Figure (spheres, protein in one colour):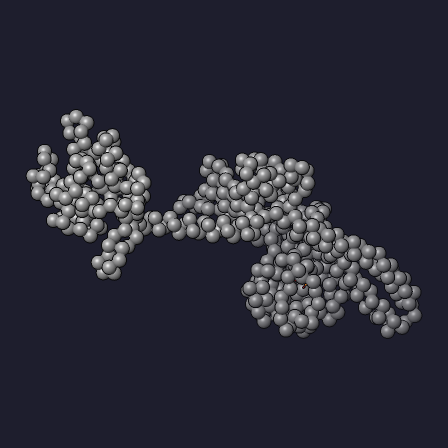
Length: 493
Ligand code: ADP
């Protein structure tokens, strides 16, 4: 290029600035030839051309057209339009493959270009400044995102999941057409907004579950609940929604993303199973109560006989009946829990006294075992006496069940900040970390040789954790396999 080819404009300085600018080409407005006047170093590099090879040539002589591309984003129609209209034209994305001298093949490249007219005195377009930017990486990144989105869509479609996206800053809400279907509306109808969806949720569930889950999610970052909804025709359905919270760099929640699944069929099976458990437990309770009464009558009559064998056998029979009654009560509690009918009867009582009573009852069922407990301070709590007793009893009987006869169990109870903490410590088989997280799930039992002969249903800890949750307390375990376990619960004062 020579500076005098750029009339009125440049000196040596301009020439340098232009040649160092990113991806610029100056062409004359002499359609249809479009003579190339100047090119920057980077333009030459990306087009694999030399300054001598293109300056003074027509654009299409230097860069032959790909005749297969006849849309209006091709160079000829864009340059022509700039000359005719005198307006700047941007082409946000176009593909122009670049020859790679090493591999001797063309590399796929995407570009974004802008074509600015340089006008002379009138409206005549004397020059066009053509600037190109390599956006190949951005286009590939966008392709990957689209591919991931497609894959995700495939997965959600296969699982019949609806998806939703809530912007916490402006409360805008977007859901997928599947959401309409789950809520009983045509998928091609306008997508339901958050208020419309909430109107279909059972009012009790909306108040007790949805709102609580939302507030919990803002703290934990996770959103999960199951609620009942009613369809426009009045039929009931169960849905499960699951989601995550997205935070900005200042750790403020900005967005929530999630899925919704129709779980009505599973729920129906579960409800049938719960009804069965409730009914069976109830039926078993009546004859058991009679057996217990007969044993008590017999025990009273025979107490005076002095026959120690008969007396101790009756005592054992009575204890076994008590164990069975506890088990049946646990099953009844389970079905009450699942159907949302477990209600607390809250009173003020002395926790130390309750622990002592429960220890005494537990020890009669396991003669010879020692459970140590020394009350440390006065502990009056406001809670459901029977249910807290049940939690203590569950934890104590587990401590006995999962430890050797020779070992001692200790119990502690004390105030800790705003809570009362009760711990039940055993020196038994302990629990592996991977099992510890799951112990409080319904029907979860640890598998292993040591546990094969220990009977149980895996509901005691589940019920205990539900009871603690309803008291706004916590329950947990610290343990090392083979060294024993410390189960604890806390209650707010
Ligand atoms: P169950 O004892 O009837 O199986 P739970 O819900 O009370 O049901 O307990 C669940 C599981 O947790 C048990 O199967 C057992 O594997 C484990 N577990 C509970 N308490 C202890 C303990 N103190 N030490 C070791 N393992 C325990």
